[in-house]
Length: 496
Image (cartoon, helix red, strand yellow):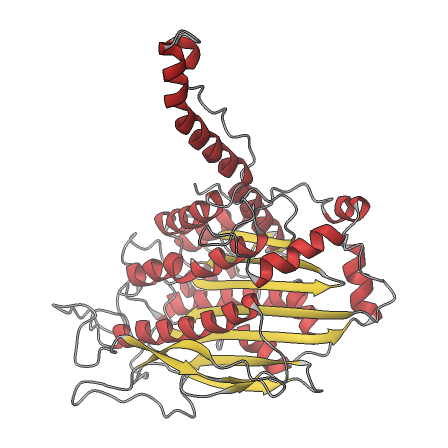
């Protein structure tokens, strides 16, 4: 009987905070996260990126100190550690966005190793007894074939205490569009792309996938990217959460964090805030005029800003995420979503054309996009903006802000659930649901399919989980936590 077999393989409805009996014990630490094995705080160091065609200097990245308390475990050697090595940029001079993704990759790897050491030193964290040391990133830096064609850096952590596998990839590309890729891009509204191919293009991307060991800690996927051709740049990216056991408060908190990021870059909200500033600054002059008899006080009162119209930028990116991470064959969404955006350009600026620090200086991203805006015809703009989704005030800054929020949104979820003990039945469900993750990547993910067309297979497939299973016709028992998850994946919620 299929239902009975499935019921035996899966867990009964677990408690909201702790599910099932522990197969690894239920140890408590009087001081969670603090032990002789705790990883020291990061220090600043210079990690060189050698540009063979010019002397542009090194990229300064966050690096971890090798100092450790006496008797503590030592980290891997520099040949396998995420720090202390150099990478050849293969003749490419990094611009502002490319430097950003290279530095963010270093920071993320350092921070994930910090979380690994904290988990290793915390006796309350549910652990696999076969794992005897914290995970550490290896670094595989490579140059693309051909001079000035770009480079990549693949960093992978495997068999960690908290993370069974984690991959963080950077790719910087200079190449020529093939006819196949050019036709695909042109069909998506990029009117400056010649469908016959042959145009020079530049691409830069940072992508990551974190696969935790615990079934109660969700998988996290995120990326930021930029594509430039014919002087025009498009930005994309996002972040999404794939739980295996659903905790509503985790999903809500995750979505709230990205709502806050989106609100800071929502054109409607930015305009409303600017309107309030103008009203506030002019209030005193209006009051003085009323005293002089030019206006009554009632006439000088501030008019409240009109309500912001929907949809908001966050609502648009949330819906976009739900639509993209969908498995038609299963009629399921891959996870509880997050934010997603693609092909975003900087046409609707409301940022005073000033730098991030409020000055008039523009970043490399701002300058390139300003040139793009000036050079494009009205016809091209209307074609590229045919998607009516809400766009951010500044695509480059919004994309960076999304990347800077990744660990802020995810680390609290990890630490809320990493003490939850789990059984073999929980793990089986975990690995079955990972199968859906692989299905989406191989069948539907546009980035994976783009990369497999002549890309570096090992770097692309680093997103795959290490242990996965496909069991025939898995139907979770009605009323179970597994069934509740599936129901939500088939009917996406508005979490905030």
